[in-house]
Length: 501
Image (cartoon, one colour):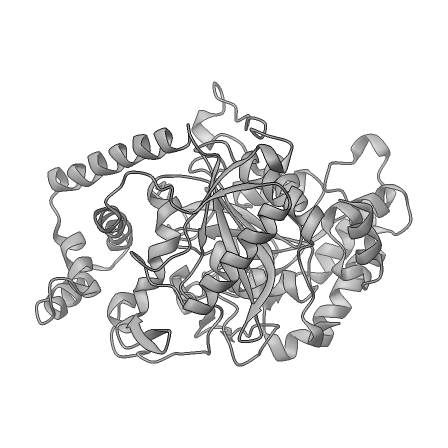
């Protein structure tokens, strides 16, 4: 963090300070863990009634952990010692329910922490609450029958994003300095973009996922595409969290370790950056593109060489269909048989290019046909690898628009989310687009298992924060993270929503 940033952040209330700065204050005994936890709890009490971001709490357990932290010897202190945190309600955390927004899991109180949560606790984090999400963690709007609707701290009439919407909103509102989210269709990056914060979708397989819902409690399936990763108010905090979270999965621990390599560069002028800022393939609002071009000019003034024509040599529509085939196959594996059959019957009445028809093909796809999709992804992996021999990063949109108004149309019209979301649309340049077209930009990194860091540009569209994603080479997560840190030092980053100050 630069001296300018440190000075600027000290002018803000302490609950808006970056995690790294709060940890320094804790280490130097300028604040205690109990005092810091209470500051955040007071901020939650002030603003959560209007925002509905934190939906479950374990205040007594957190205060007990904070008291232990204040009395711990220096040798017992981990890198997150005394830091208060909230956790997305897809994760099992002892002392609180883990529901994933499903009413039938309202009474599920896990007896073991999810693996990623256990690593955060072992590093000294104090987890005091769970944050809201869409039912099943499959929407860019965070609402469900159990906990209701979460609102964006910048505008309560808009979504904070999803599925880690409560997570991103909590970070932006000053409820917590660090969060744990998950991403299979932009679920970390979209809410980070919508709320004006930072979020990192790790390379696939870098962070263990056991204890995340889905799959259902007690199941051990490892889904393709899905990852666990951090959200924060600073890019430096993201790397701090990744150093704690990165680890092999449970059964691989006897022989494997995870060591993310250093960033390719340490100076902005050394990064080879490609910019994809046009709507020739995937939809994006023209006002968002204008911000991206201004952001690119900012980077050029910092000495970054930005190539606006470079792309991997990929058929992007075919790549998107590969992603959709994989994603919907993952979704289909968790559908009850009667819901799957309903989806197939419903899709028969729709065009073959519709999202319900695509989902129905995933439900009925034979095993041997699925391996054709697997082969297509293997080819994508190698094309992206070749691209990253020439470039270090690809900067592109996170979503077609900034955060939009709450839209719950279609609720109750069908039992499956694909058919339900067919009732909605996404307005891009005044024209309706299929709601699920919001998967297009997030799919770039997900389908190829790549790391991607969502960063705020410092600019706004329709008075809402505008972010971009930095896609980096597979398993080289520190490269987009380091670039984000260097840009943050020069241009600034997170700005608090005025209503939460």
